[in-house]
Image (cartoon, rainbow, N blue to C red):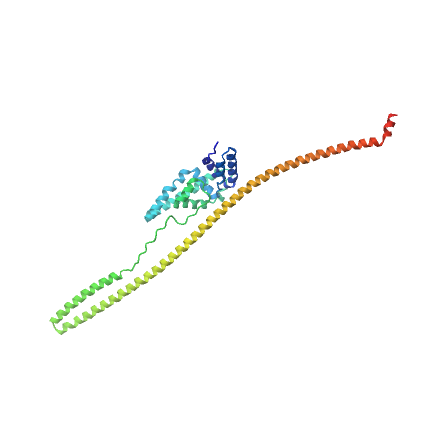
Length: 341
């Protein structure tokens, strides 16, 4: 009869991690006993979860309807962030915190009903919370959580893709004021021109104010050019400052990406090392069980040998006593003769 792997997986991944390997080896032995070698080989490859991953698996296996709520909320969060809907994003972030807190509380309730489970004070609930937040940010993690066969806790930095910031160069109202100044200057020049024409038709006393108006217009035009150059220099200075800030931000981004790659590589190496160690532990446990069986057989053999030795010694003593008695009779024949007389 074939082994039901789905049911067996649910049972194994509900088993506390300290008893997982023994339960898995028993399942492998049962599959081999019924002749399902392929299934036995697959079961032997199932890895033991960490305590935090086991808690998440309990939640997924015992309360799948609660874990299913992560999907719609995650999609809504991604949409709000992509569309830069600040108010909606704040509302959904509050819902995310409430949902994760409720799921962590549910984990406590589930564990409380499991015999010999670790006490609540020793449960890595912070890692459970981090994994649930990661499931809301990463669809791949969400799939692992829903499967109920998570192997270790997952941490996620931020939420989804971070939109590229929109930078604007803010220069103030100098240019607009300069434009207005130029218009005013033009108006002044026209007025001055009109005054000059009027002065030409009038007396010399009328021409003096006209010349002063021309000089005033020239000064205003010169001041406006100076102001425009100053505004342009300020814009250039701000642009250089923004360029430097952008270069620093990109350098920090590249460094962060390198750090992330290094951390991801280290994580994969650690996971591989853990898998190897778990495989070695499983092999050592198998060899330990075989050694214990061999030791038990050796103890039984020793006890049987001790009993045989005791019986042989007893028999040796008995035979030696008979021989001694026979020797004594042969050494004193007169005693028999006298007894006969």
